[in-house]
Structures are given as C-alpha cells and as structure tokens.
Image (cartoon, rainbow, N blue to C red; front, side):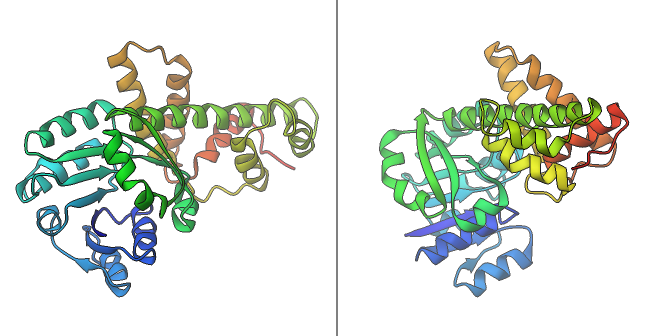
Length: 294
C-alpha cells in the first residue's frame, strides 16, 4: 500500500519505520530533514509539503503535536485539501481535541476526503516495537479496510465509534494515567513519611486491587529516580488541556483532572516539563520536604 506519512517526531518516526518494514511504500514529510533522511535510507520518498504528499497518496497518516498542527496540514496553505483526490482518507493518529477532529473531518468531507481519528497510547517504546494501542473513530467500513495496516504499528486497534470518538477514548486514557501516577506518587510519599519502606509497600500492594499497569510501569522508576522521558510532562499537559476543553463543551465534570493539571503545571514551572510524567513524584517530594528512597 502506498501511504503518505506526515510528522516524523518521537512517535511518528518509529511508527513510519514499522510501516516500511511491513512492506508499505511511504511518502513522508516533516520539518526535520534528518528524520526524513532516515526514512529515505529505508526506502521512503521525502517531499516538501503536505500538498505534495496528498498529490501522490490516497491514504495519508498524520502524527502531529496538537489540534492546530493537524488543521494546518489538512486545511491550510499547501495542505492536504489542495491536491487530495475525492476518496482520499486521512488517518490522524495525533492526540487532539475531539471537537477539532469532528470539525476538520467535516471540512474535509466537503471535498470528498474521509477521515479517521486514531490516536495511540504506549509512548515511544511501544511505537518502536510496534505494540501501540490504537483507538479509532470514524466510518466503520473505513476502519475495517485499514485495520490490518494499522496493526503493523500496534498491538491492538479498537474501533470506538464515530469520528472524534478515538480522541475521546485517548483523553479518557490520559485522565486515568495522570490520576494513577499521582496516586502512586502520593502513596509512596505517604509510606516514607509514615515510616515504612516505599519499595516494600509497593511490593505489598501491587498484587491487590490497588495494582495497575501504571503502578508497575512508574513505581520502579520513581524508586530508582529515573525520569528520562517516555512521555513528557509537557505533552501530558497538552492532553489534559484538550480533555478539560472537551469536558467543558460536553458539560462533563472533571475535578480530579483539573487537580492533576495543576500538579503538572507546577512541575513545568519548576523546569521539569521535559521529564517523564513519572516526575509527578517531585511535586510530592517538594510538598513533603523529602527525597523518595528505596
């Protein structure tokens, strides 16, 4: 399959490499020339704009930072809409505001361009090994048609509903992850302040109801004080901002999400925006005037 891929960042580059490895023909575009060069070395073709991508491909994937970037690539000057043929499909795998997914999809539909929103969860490690979780919204027939292609980048690909539902699911995921990390950091800080070993407390509770994938992923890193980014605080801020905006539009209560956002904003102000979101621990260490120890 000939696929256009726009956005070769931390996530997009390994995802596109997995498509090439699976035998797909890629036409790529990114502002970072070195990233495009890496894909060219693997056999992809690099072009200078989204417009050029759409001129060559009827299947286009975008993996971009946020809603405004997707809008510009889809509908702006030198965007997909300028050259895309009717029947072209845009599979946006960025994590953006679901209200924008719907609006961009509606504008593209006027030109005969279909759209799926298919954000991912799993971070850079799972992007590299091709085991991302994909949650997709859009026309069910389109989803079924491109399911196998999406699976070359993923461990699971789940249909959630109409366009926008993929990003609703992703934001729900990000709410749960932020609150879980905060709870783990709070619990481990509590354990140490109260006189117990945080590591032994973690081992004691991880097999019970409190145990979770998030706890097992983040508690050991907190205990080892490893905060190299798997998923940066500044990106989680972006996702929670989209969740809060979407929540306001839907009149959905998000009091805990707002609190998690404030924690992340404090950390960003303290210079930790590029740390992994497991650095939420540093917020609790600051409040408790401690350094977590095993």
